[in-house]
Structure formats: structure tokens, C-alpha cells
Image 1: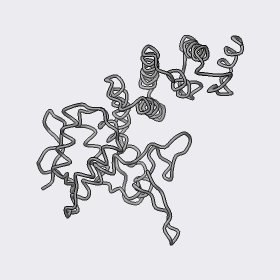
Image 2: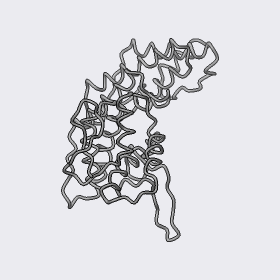
Image 3: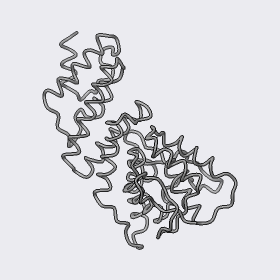
Image 4: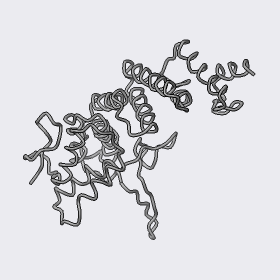
Length: 288
């Protein structure tokens, strides 16, 4: 039986007919419903492993295979790092790449193998799930993998990827931070970076400003808690970022944190300072 997207207040998957040929296994639907109800932090790759284990060895119909791809492989795509845009020039990349004996390059998961039905499914899920981590992921998958699909299927018509899909992902990434639902400090900064990246990509001034403000608040929380790294995450994310404006007060706050980190021995000399950060370098030189 095809399991539909929710129409109730739980945001969970429910049993009903849906227009697209995607079926979600009951065990997977139940686990996702538990996550929706608990609002627990989520590590995407770990969730994909959990869901994969629920499939077992049962024979799957084509609809069920599509459902497993949507909900399992969807959480297995890995964000790329730095300037590397991966094999698809995308935010998402594979967790593994290899070469067959015949020379063919294989990626797992493979964004180019994702069907349009799955992308439409992600779009719908992003509208209906109440968990911000899930909402951020589904919207981001639809936005990024949808753009890959459109590039690869120019003759087949385009999947509609409205601007509010990216906005939904931005808002959900930031909501995750606001509600303390990040799985780790690393994930928190990854979400902040992604929110800002998307806001800059679609040129949304209000969301650019909000992403910056939430990042500052995250740094302040970490500093108040006595955690290290609160300053360089922020510095790497926003200093001299094209399309992002920093006030003199904000620049001064970052520099004061850098000075504080040097005083307690977290930074030695000019470690962690980008060569182009003239204001930061000058401030450090003045204290030597």
C-alpha cells in the first residue's frame, strides 16, 4: 500500500493513497513519526543507517524501492567541504566514489540516478514535516538534487524549484540552532554556513542578516559556556564574505574574541588568521 504524506498535526507519514508512486515501509514511517514527536537531534548519516536496518531482507516493490531511496539515500548524501563542489557541482556529494574495472566512475549515493518522483516527494515532505532538521534536509535535497536533475534532463521538462524552497531550508536550518536541536557543535556551524550560503545564493537580504545574527548568537553562547572555537567558526564564516555586511561593532567583537583566545593560549602568533584580514592582523600586531 502507498503511504501518504501527513495531513494531521504530527507531521508524520500516514497510511493513505498519494498521487506519486512512492511507498514508505511501515517500519520507516514509524521511526520517522517517533522523531517528529520527540523533536530529537538528528545526525543524517546515522539516521540513514537506522532506516536501512529497518528494511531487512524483504522483497520490495518498485514503489517501496523508491520510498527507501527517498528516505534512506536522501539522508546519506554528504555536504561537500570548502571550495570542493563534488562530482555534480553541488552542495551535496557522495559518501563514496570508486572506479569499476571498465573505468566507469561510481558514486554512492548517485544524485544523477535520483528520479523526479523522489524530488517531488522531498518537496512535499519539506512542506509538511514539523521537525526543523528534517524540513531543512528535505528542502535542501529537493533544491540541490532538483537542480542536478534539471541539468541532466533538459529535454524532459523542468522540475519546478521555487525560491521559497530555498527559503524553507534556510529557515529550518536556523530554527534548528534557535531550538538547540543540532546534533553537535560541528553540525550547528554546518547548518549556519548552509543557511548563509543559501541566503546569499538567492539574494535574500533579510535571511542573510538573520543567518549572520544567529551565527553571532551561537558564538556568544559558546563563549559564555567556556567552549573553545567560538571565534574562528564565526570568523571563517563571515569575515570578508561577499554579499555580507559587517558593522564596525561586529568586526570589533570578532577581533576582541580573537585577542581573548590568544591571551588564554588558544592561538599562537597569527595562527587561524587569514592573510587578507588586514584589520585582524593589525589588531594582533598592536598587542604584541
